[in-house]
Length: 248
Ligand code: GLP
Image (cartoon, rainbow, N blue to C red):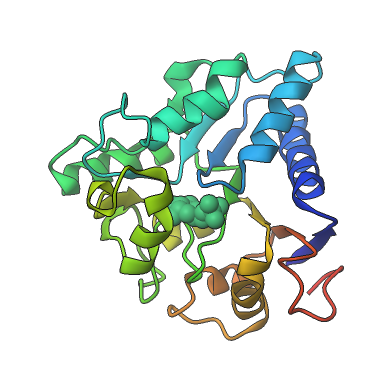
């Protein structure tokens, strides 16, 4: 695991966007695993800017997103489908028929998960998976306690995650209680993983996840066992880790 220290959120976003760009340039037909949440927004903005300058071409790229709320339509502005279009896909030359998310409106959860696993397989697996980090160490919507060998599955969100996501909804009752998410096994199958983390409120979990024991109680800790992980974190997020600028 390599940990890159960024000065602040903008620096983290630029460094992350550079790594994603490198992937797209080196393999124009690559499969990017993408993430939502507030942390990757700056990196997406940077990619759009470089695309507009003519430095990037997404025409052959395929994307698979980590997760989607169960029960939100694609038109709902809180669905991750909507988020991805608004923050990235609408602004670059990606072929939208090659951008995939779990189908949040598929009521049969076994089918939704099976279909999504098949999609990931059919595109040949993920070359570079982008991840944010939840306050409790979740990645995607893999909450503490999740078995490491799971693939795409339906999860009940924890109270903490529901509260954290409440800021995006009119009221707590509007926050979906379930989501479809790639499992830890799916995430660990990506060839390369890029984690972005920002802010002092993540400092405790960064230390636990990347310097503590590998345990299902902290789902992100499994990333320590992947052979190609880059963490780009800003100084605030790294505040509780003493020696972090290099390889771990
Ligand atoms: C959500 C998403 C995760 C994301 C996490 C952290 O629960 N499902 O994929 O990483 O929140 O979000 P943020 O980046 O806003 O802190």
